[in-house]
Length: 352
Image (cartoon, rainbow, N blue to C red; front, side, top):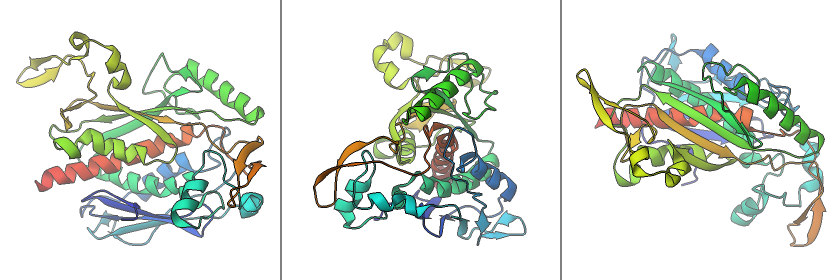
């Protein structure tokens, strides 16, 4: 398999390159009769699009979604839904000087070794721009999940080592989608410093999935935790993933970590949620909490050591328009991949 499709029932295939004609997705398996809200899908695209905030790339794409199939009289038909966005502001000439070089920490070297050919214009298929198609598909998944009462929201909880401490999840209306107003100002300053120093920074996105019913996911190799991990780690710049307390759970005692239970009327309830809403790979009805770590943007305006396609040592200077921190635009991508994964698991559960 070529690795461009995710899901078993709610199946998403993405296509297109950073500097090609267009990017898009085909979603197969979306149930019929789901109200289709193009304005909502476009609003999700606007959260990710280049040029959407003053801290990011100066590439300015409208990312206007065009729906080609699968919708009739405002609802899904059960047929494949195809959506595309055109590339209109690509500067391919910015990459001509490095077409024979391998940019540090990019996929240039591995793509060349695996395929024997690569699209050097902005990274081609390995570019973060590929995620625009994921966001379109994820917005459709959100519309499906909304009909089931399931909601997904994410925010930047750490950037450049600065953590959100005074968190208000209902107050993320800023350029970083950070739920801490005080930390937001410090994060913003750190990103600006990195830009001026021709460098970049990374960070962590936290995502909450609410109202998930008990029973999604399967034992062993199809755990809901592993499906979510696969979905989120497939995002190009993502280098780490955790659920609930995550790596901090390794530093806790069982007496503190264990989510004790009680009865709330006639319903079971948990006193804590250190497990992040998943037990034994199966959703337990609590809020699912995941976090994803994103590396610093590898395209920085500094001279770096590298090699050529002929295996000769040289240096390179990456030109172009790049984000000093991709975390703000990655927030909606994390939401999208979680939505696709949960939609697929929900339909699998119904099928069983």
